[in-house]
Image 1 (spheres, rainbow, N blue to C red):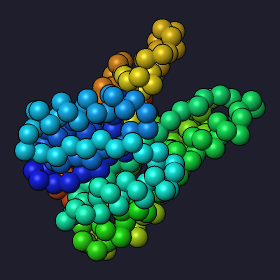
Image 2 (image 1 turned 120 degrees about the vertical axis):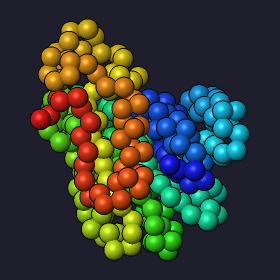
Image 3 (image 1 turned 135 degrees about the vertical axis):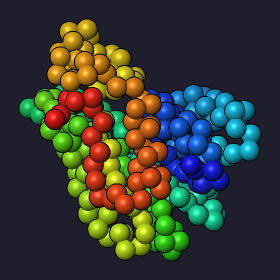
Image 4 (image 1 turned 45 degrees about the horizontal axis):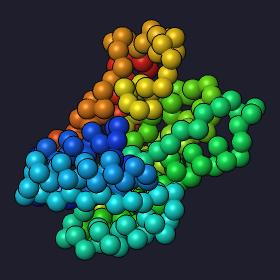
Length: 248
């Protein structure tokens, strides 16, 4: 489905991002993915993928999406020279939970700058390339927290809600250029982010999910490759909720 296509994924070294990288790799894509920390984990992933798919390119790049200069360097050193950049997946994100009454300014700004500002930085950097080639698909990883809110996550929910607004607005700017922009809104997914939750909290969450289970990272990866593919050629400006029936 993505044979010889070029794909960029932010936050691709673990969790949902890793699953997205692996899914595009399995479909024949060349993938450049960023990581913020855990360099050994990211490089190991790239090496494993090279061994599995020797005819494809896999490159792990340290880049803080919230830093415009690092994003610019990533683009200029790795993406600008490509004949085409076919897909951008904005996945990089962090959490720093707490009630708003006690939330620090750093907790607020760090999450907003990474989860929303990082998408602006990366997308703006590649945008002219996509416009000039008159093709491309952008997939922004939001969250159900951005759809219905979540106590203790005003910073995260605000960023993810803002990302849906960004997706809808940007899709209107680019629809005439043959560039599609969509968002994913994952529910509770079994990753490192949720592994630290205690049994009581997990039980409460599972009770709210229609399918009575957490999703897997591969569920989100499957949705990401769908939205980026020609199978979704008539879809743009849409947030796709993937949550097992949490929000119906």
